[in-house]
Length: 212
Image (cartoon, rainbow, N blue to C red):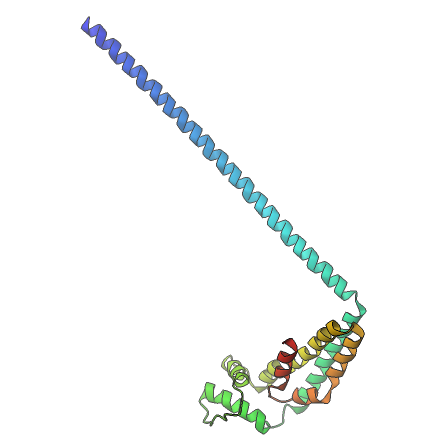
């Protein structure tokens, strides 16, 4: 009899443990399903985000494209591009014409100061000279540029930008027709052409003045 009771007890215990194991297995399956569902939701969110970003990028490109088309359809803007090209050509002409000239005193002070910083060339710094322009020259010396490259980047490019921003500024103040006339006169004004052939800070200063 005791053996029968013990057998029944063992059987009930085994059944109870089996039931608990089955419940745990069901819980584990539910957790796995929940994790899979979360993963699918995250994938969908990621896809939606990528689609949204692609659409946003596409919309921005389309907006830029439309703005560019609108800008190019304006005859005054096309004329301003022509004036800029003309301004660049005439400045390169005078650049080639004067590239063999020796430096003026003012130019030589800026260049000598920059060489003093980069190459330790003996030079006594003049307190009346600005230091930002020679600092820019020294940076270009450090990357291997010579006098021609320095003059092009720090003088000719700012001089052409002066023509461009003159057009932008006058257009905002008056109208496009007056802006075209102003930018053209700026492109051929003798003082700008003169300083476009000198390693001096006048054109760069004038550009900063317009931007301000």
